[in-house]
Image 1 (cartoon, one colour):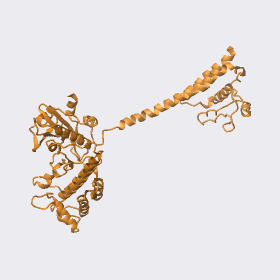
Image 2: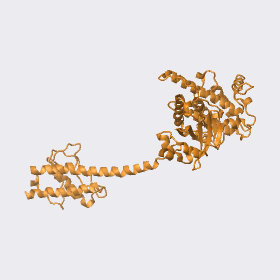
Image 3: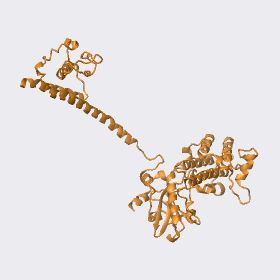
Image 4: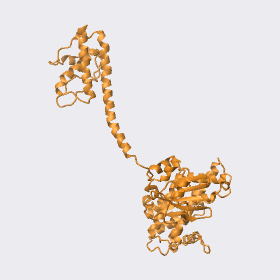
Length: 474
């Protein structure tokens, strides 16, 4: 019995040694090849299964020096009387194996070694290789993760991911110098300029209502719907919503927006004290408006601007257009109208009419920008009527309506704008093109990309709003 157990113990040692070499990713050297060949043959003897088929049968030869690792033996289904194996001489350095060790009691441990030890070693090697290649890739993937494409980072990014932040009145009061820094005052709302400790300028817009008794459920519903609507736009040619404030004592309903330092488009076109805008600057404004409206109309659900005109378009420090929406402050004081909840057809009609209305308003804006004239003068006919007369007379380029101060205009660009105006002011809304078609046509003729039309600087990019940190603390 001790004699019969000696040979399997040797095989265990050799097999485990070979397994360790495989696991370590090493191949047998040329000097070890005869021993390797012997191990293969010895394992085949012990397994004792029938002869392999001719398709997979081939004699086991040691590879020549310099060929790399030795190939694994083909699958064996039995030993039998194989003339090729019989013709293969045993290596001189290894004594002939003792065939008396093929007793029935030795088959089980040898099968275990052949069927478990080697696969386990191969599995460990596979896992090690997988870890080696996957971990660096994962590190590289993590390293490439950056902020949003819109430029948000830090607290601002978190705010827009989790929802619009609710800010404290005390922080806004401090930023706006106790609400004494009034930019403009309207019957229904005030606009304050605020400066954060980081130097970022913000616009704080507040309702003129000072008592909760005057703030109805309709007012609150309008206020919250507008917050939801504005928070979804997030376009660089839009005055983006940064936060809001609602407190009951003292009564407060405010929105915190980006600040645009160059006033409105209306002022730049019609007020003498404002800097004159040349042809190229006006083309950049037109394209910024087109890209922003396209973005709004293609949201799901679409966002319709309720009052698109030159006074609702602000200009950034470098003259880029930024669309603003202050309509909520008029809506909160209006009488609430019953909502037709669940009437999808009615809602679709309203949205479709609103989108077509935005296209018409955009056509009127184009007329106002290229002519420098008020769209609806008190004692003269409207710009739309003048444009329709030009079209009926065959002058689609609107040359007769061109602002005489625009000496640097381009005839081909003016002609394309005339075509777009004609399409936008169609009396039948169904005949007006979509804003995407309009933006594509204008870009083809004017050649200003979305990147060139956006502001180079924006409060969204400069720094994080520290008031957002106080919002979290509150």
